[in-house]
Image (tube, rainbow, N blue to C red):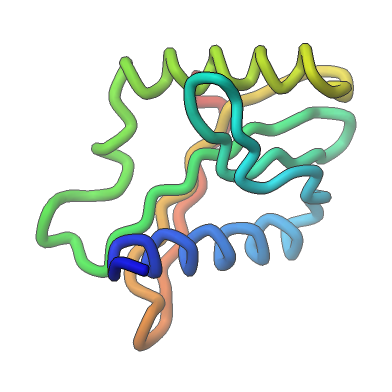
Length: 117
């Protein structure tokens, strides 16, 4: 497995634990649709939350949130629609992004943006 894949999987695991500690229930992970993948689908308080996780070991190449472009948000909205059509969304839906910085060899910093799209 390539180092970037290891970093990404580690970030997704940290993000899932972060969400669970915040009272979210993880419904799905790494769900594959026709046009891509949803990192995490969670539920909190009757809202289905689709979470994109961006992980960077350092900020050398920019903040992880910078990787979530308008094009990426459109793709995530389409994937969320696919998931809802294939499964059962709970009440409202929301799209969030979690940035994980560091974490492989030391502590990670986690930032959570709610309702980005």
